[in-house]
Length: 212
Image (cartoon, rainbow, N blue to C red; front, side, top):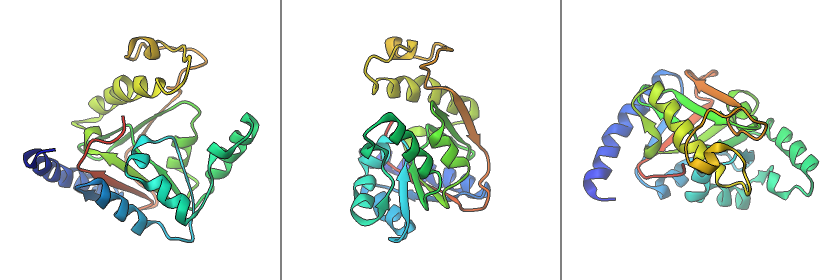
């Protein structure tokens, strides 16, 4: 990234941080992945039990690896059966810190997320003591309408590629086709317009492209 793009991201990022703070989110701007990782670890006590939802962004800054090395974690990847995986995902709803990203964030401070099983959005809404979000500036949009469009037409079709033999139209055509089938990964559309209790959700905006 050249210095002009980095400067624009910093200026725009501060605008979005201010909008998030008006909605009672704790919000931070970090120019780089390294700064974002350091900030996230500052926000997570070493005594916390940590879990996470599906997120490329937390992997890209090294956060998942860091908390696995430092904290007690609830990790669904360790499950040996589908039933055990489901139970681990249920346990994650009562962890101390839940890590995730957001499919989109509007300029005026709205979080937009789409979920299939619902575990990620459920943890965002209620359960864990705090939620720490890692969000690249590529996910910031002008308003709610453009945030929803980004979540549906960019994030969801790319996420669908992670699942082998996914039969949904977005996996085949690369765009939302308004499907209503059992395998859809777009079962829940969640717009978070304010954080309650205040500062429970902590959004770290990163001045780089992260995730989908």
